Every structure is written in C-alpha cells, then in structure tokens.
Image (cartoon, rainbow over all chains, first blue to last red; front, side, top):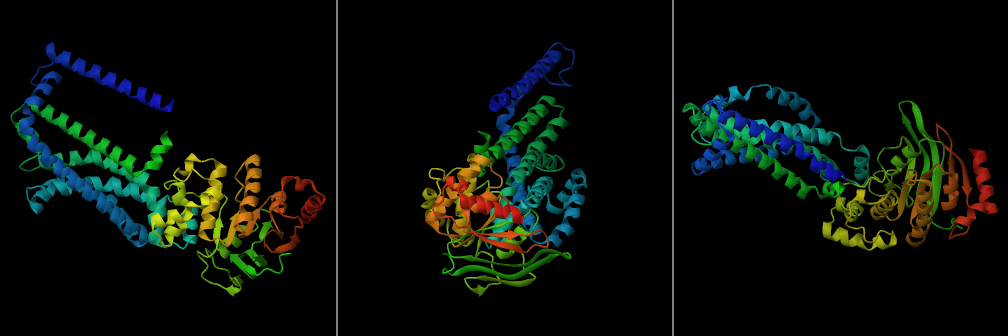
Length: 255
Length: 249
C-alpha cells in the first residue's frame, strides 16, 4: 500500500513537467518568445544529439573531476570524522573552522585555485572536494554523535575499546546519516566541477558552456544544462543503489 | 540444596555513591553455581547500578566483588549483562548479533558464526539466523538477546528485567521458555525484576532490596521443586512465599 502511493507520488511531478515543457514549446513556436532568447525544447534536444559526439570529451573531463573530487571528499570526511570522534579536542577546534570555511564564496576561491594549482583538472577537483566535503562530514558527525548510549555500554561491557565501538556501533549506526550527506554532495559534485571549469579551464562542460555563451548559441547552452542535470541525477541514483547494497538491513525494512 | 555448590559470584559490602547520595550502600550477596537468583525491589533502588558494577562498567567505592572466589578489578567481559531493551544491532543479522561478543574478542566472522550456529536450536530461533532484528517479534528478539548474553559469558549472566517490556502473555511464555532453556544450559543467573510472581516462579533464591540507600533487606529461599510449571503458581508454598514478599515490601 505504502509502495503504491509512493509510486503514484511521482506522477503529478511528471505530468506537471510535461505540461510545462509543452507550454514552453508552444510559446516559442507561436512566436510569443523569440527562439534566440529561449530555444524550444525540441531544438534543444535536436542540438543535443548533433553536438553529442563533440561533447563526449567535455563530459568525460567533467565526470572525472567530479568523480575524483567526490570520492576524495568522502574519504577525507570519513577520516576526519573518525579523528574528530576519537579526539574531542580536535572536534572542538575544527568544527567552527569547518563552518567558517563554508561561508567563503566558491566563486571567489576558484580563480585563486587557478593561480595556485594551474588550469588543469586539479583546481576543479579541489573545488568539488570543498563543496562535497561539508555536507558529508556534518551529517556523519551528527550520526556518530547520535549513537545509542545503551548499545555503546553493551559493547563496552563486552570489552570493546574505542576502535571497536566505532566499528560495531557508531559507524554502522551513522551510515544512514552518511548517505544522506553523500546524496546531497553527489548533486553538488557535477555542479562544482562545472563552476570550476567555467571560471577558467581548457576542457569540460563548464568550458563548453562558456564558449557557446560567447557565441550566443543558447540552444547549445541548454543542451549542456540538460546534460548536467542528467549526470547529476545519474550520480544521485547511483548513490541510492550503493546504499541499497551497503545497507541491506534498511532495504528489508522497507518491504 | 545449593549450599554445597561453589560460589560463582560474591559481593561483599559493596558501596557506591553518586554525588553524595548512596546509590548502593552495603550490598552483600552470593550467586552459586547453576543457581537462579532474583533481586527484587522498588524502582530506582540501585539495582541497575549494582549490575553495572558487577559487569565492570562502573567502579565500586568500597567493598569487594569476587568471581570464582577471587577478587577481580577488571571485570569487563567476564560476566554478561542483558538489558530490558534487547539492544540487537539493527545492521547485523541475528547470527552476527549473537556472535558479536566473539567478534569483539577477535574471532573471525566465519568461526564466530559456526560457533554460535548450534545454539539456535536450543534457543528456539532455528531458521532466523539470517534475518535482521526488525523482522523478529519482541519475544524472539529477547531470546536472541539472551542467546548473545549466553555466548558472551556462559557462566555468569546478569539479566536486568529482560521481560519487562513484553506483554503479559509473551512474558509468561518467555518465563517458561527460560526455565526450559536453563535446564539445559545450567548457567548461573542473577535476575532483576519488579514482578514478585516472576521472581518466585523462576528463582532458587530471592534477594529483597530496600529503597535508597539500598541494601539487601531479606533473603528468601524458594522451596519449589524443579522442573517448574505454571500450576505451581497456585500451590500453597508459592502463595505463602508471595504473601511473605508482599509483606516485606
């Protein structure tokens, strides 16, 4: 019953999106909106397919930057969370700085990274890491903190030290939180790479977007946006899948 | 009948103070081999503090806790402790939950699993080895928790109101089940409960604890033969014991 209502829950959004797209298409075709200000969805799709062969290398670059930065952010978050959980002083000292770091606009940082790390993939990877890192570590730390005290007592009574408490109780208990952080970060990862490229680079979807903007090829711009959306959703779904594999107990709970 | 058996666990004049108030003041008790002993008393009388001390989670201020006759300071991992909540880890299959004490000791997953596999029949959980805790009923989870407690230390088990969270019918079933299982296991069990009938029905002896500062007010021997069965609850001896306990409360 629950499952069914969840499925039907997707229909309104799909219908709404279809109606919006149709309205958009109609308003461009009828001449109400000029095609050079806003290209029709049909021409965006057409351009997407004609441009795709040339776009492949850009997509690949963006995906690499996003993927490496994202994975590095996950690894770094887990390592740092572990350290912060083991040494409370580290947490007290670092947590405010973490929050502070998020208030610095990435837009300003990106050109700086260009100066520091050159114009290759590295500065983009660093940006992706920066934007992905925060949601992951914050949710993971929340999860670790919310560990059940009785469960910790239980395993402590079995003679478990700090590392074992982390391995058996704290970390698995915080996996749900970790994944909600990772899911947010996943959608940021592609976007972060594109922003990095946009602000200076030689390849990637951001560079491509910057070029087509300069030539006022808005249909190509929209095609690139569509690719970014599809990639982000694909990463998001991939994380969902991974969660199902890594947390089988939560899957069996749904049934 | 039990006095000839050796003492597994002994508490001598154990005291514990939390911020100027006595949680436990001067408790002495004995648990002998294969004996089932209950502790009953009003809630908040420090029974759980007592268990935390025995299992080594908190340190006593005064007195001595002896295991098999010798005073032991580092008791963590020597006696097993089961709480009212089953505390099965939701991310582990039942078999891995049960094997957890072995895994903590460093046994490999495969070895730990094979070591506990045979117990599932005894504990009536055959076929549920690879389920997750939330797929089991409350009574079954409690059984799994008891099994884990047994795996942890098969000699001395501290059970803190293990059936306190169950409905009356399931509770009765679990009591009978526990009696049956322990006929086989012959573990030494120290059992906390609020329930006078439960204490009489299950125990060889009962310690009655006073309100804070808590001490042992009385020790009562339950002269009911084993194996026990439900009809004994209306026997003369049972009712006399119940009267006596109600009076002392």
